[in-house]
Length: 421
Image 1 (cartoon, rainbow, N blue to C red):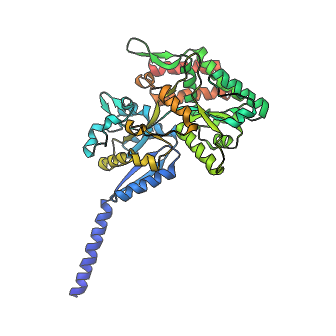
Image 2 (cartoon, rainbow, N blue to C red):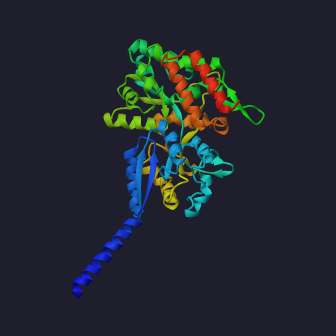
């Protein structure tokens, strides 16, 4: 009996220890918005191997839903522990008190090169405190199938919006292929701003008295709507683009891969995915793609200095584990092995980037023709709401549901309301 009792005690003790070990495992959730889900899961597997006491559940969501979904969850103390957001959402989320300030997290560990090594940290600040860690940096540029342009007799790359329209028309008339096509639903927000900025306008500008005002007229908005709609009505882009949210949508990507479209605009990571997909499908063949700066208007071409930020949910029960994950996700190793389509938002790592010849347009754009969202993010008009409202208004015009004049007037009214003017 003594032996049996000892066995029972030993087994019971082992089970208790096993249960304790299971209970000791920390489970955190990471929400990720980009398309590299498999690569990110592989990265998290490596993190878990190095940190066997932490398990990370990977959640994925589309960019168009990410902001609103997290704000709804966080308002009731729910949501993932670590969240992947846009640069310009950080201040809004800090104001809503749903993300933790960095000063409360650095007690769990500092960054190798310090927080000052990150770029665009001003976009993470609210009332003197930083609330997010800039994760990746990017911008948008133009992308071309050079062979399609050549077959249409287009010499060189377009440099302004009028030349882009002319080249698109030539491609359609001489080859029957699409000229310039783009994601015309939620992310029409980006080309619309580039069009306005290059023509001296903007949705929100400083008023010179410490406040903000609308910086675009109804006529300018209607002109922008008519310009982008012309590619659809003239048959140079398929009507289906009005339902496409993302520049990496398979429909747009496949048209470029198959040589059925001449031009597009997209962020850096999407172009890198495009290049990889072409080389995988056509091993050894020359790559028929080139990139160029965004189109100029009456002024210089401009795109936004964009990127992604990592924030820690203010309701997390595991801030130390969450911060450890943030430190891993911002490491050089992650960008070298897993998140290879993105540029790290760290000065020390950006300096090490080698651009491919096909990426020269992105290098030029990022170095010489970018601006921050500035007044957009600093005003009372919350960036996420401004983005969604603008995209909906342009969608109604591009799809023909409303005239450009009507859609522009309604958008201006909404902008005034958001600014509180």
